Image 1 (cartoon, helix red, strand yellow):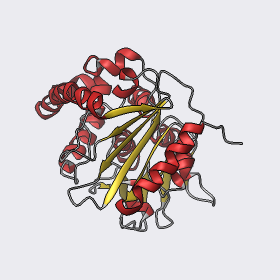
Image 2: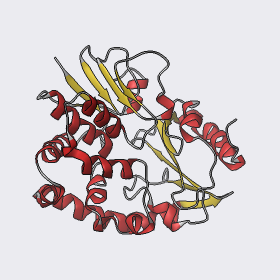
Image 3: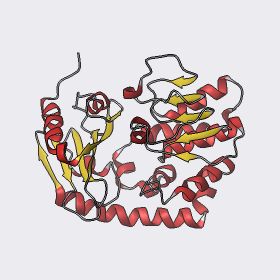
Image 4: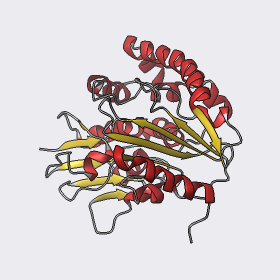
Length: 300
């Protein structure tokens, strides 16, 4: 049985759209986070098509674009350091004549969103940009949104972006994004400090971690060259989640984030990444990570 395994973000959803179309797959999509591949929690089966996730030897085809996941051995599929995993998938299937140019616009916008190639207006007013605001409706809160992710795959396969946004559930979620982004701005201003041109947002004092526009910090704190977001992964406080990114507008950070976080069990791109730390060692690890960011040295 052929099954799509991908992560629940906009890039992962578009990967699923392309693979479904190319392979004519109608089985349920298996949604997992990268850490679940790295820890072995995810069950990857023979025949699976894995996209936008770390490699697993059990899969039949693998597609990715994260520098921290660069393959060390031969595999079937496609890998390159590219703006999106969807772009890697698209190129592969177009070469095989299983896809034509039908999804050019969708993949173009996926590249922009996943590589954070955004301008100030797109960051401040995402509701003006259909693909951007749609991407912000995709969050993973204990896999409660699996039906919504599956729905988006079906919608994006079958209709254009204007019709997707007319769907009542999609419209409702897009409206909620606008409200949440306004509240998120207040949380960022209250819980962020700047040290050595790094913005550090620590939400560990909050019972509920606020959600919102992940790029907004770069607009609010233009002097920062990179952002660090710290929060607990759940009410048990067993793990601390760390997200780090280069500023979109003050491009002076030289640290390869994906390689840095790979040393702490995470990974990502040169410009952005994340990791999960056990709470008892988190403060020490964060201190080490921040020191490397403060030094801001280029890799040799």
